[in-house]
Length: 123
Image 1: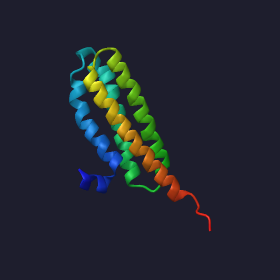
Image 2: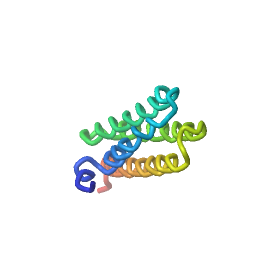
Image 3: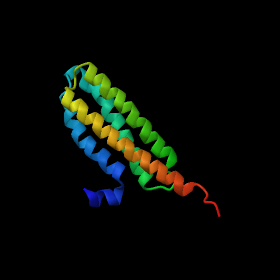
Image 4: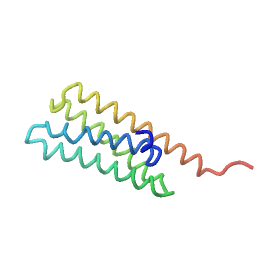
């Protein structure tokens, strides 16, 4: 895992692992919600993955990282909704919340590093 994180970035690798968990978890949603809330969750998670991949391969990262961060926040609310509607048990909800917090922290650190590198240094 650490070798891949060095190649692609810690936030991207953490979110990729989250999606590996997410797909089967959404498959357990009731049939009526797999194609509504489940699709929205998966689509949002994949949008975050797209933004992180793009940010990995460009120097203009700030907008992409902001978009990924916003996607993480959307996912927090979607998972809360799924929990409140009892489509997720407490254990799965806790896993998702912790994983999203971890990825969010990693994105925040990446944004800070990027801003620090972009800001002019005093002479």
